[in-house]
Length: 215
Image 1 (spheres, helix red, strand yellow):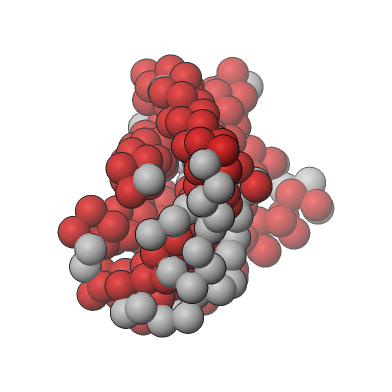
Image 2: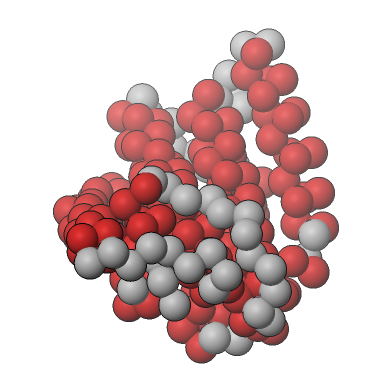
């Protein structure tokens, strides 16, 4: 199960990185790289479900007293949301390019750099089982303060018909905020696991993955 978690983390990190680059560089090549990887992502998710059904079949219920099992559920759920948000960035970028919008927002590029740094932090934390990298995400609470003052003015601009802001840029900014929120969720889950704290707040994507998480 740990190997599935690492594989999903790697694929999610790559999707986020490529999706951000697709917007920053206006690159259809990076868009295609993300979309082409969806089959591999689906295969890993099916593997998680198959593992869950196997555990159910042999009567091995989830151990809710296990910090790793419970925190793994939160991480699985957050990775699924993250991957979906990265895919949406790609789709919005492609629509934007089809509409002839070639200029990119400097603020959204800056947001993308912040998001990428958060995702890299939890990726390293999971692979190295390093609590310090995960704790850095939680300590950097000011990043949240950075996002929201930028997304809500963009929303107001769109609502008032400000063409310069652009609906696609607003949607991309919202996706970046979503990925940032999931990074905080994953960072908190990793800290809970590695410090063996109570980790009962589960963000489970579905019952199949819940059934397969055991220590």
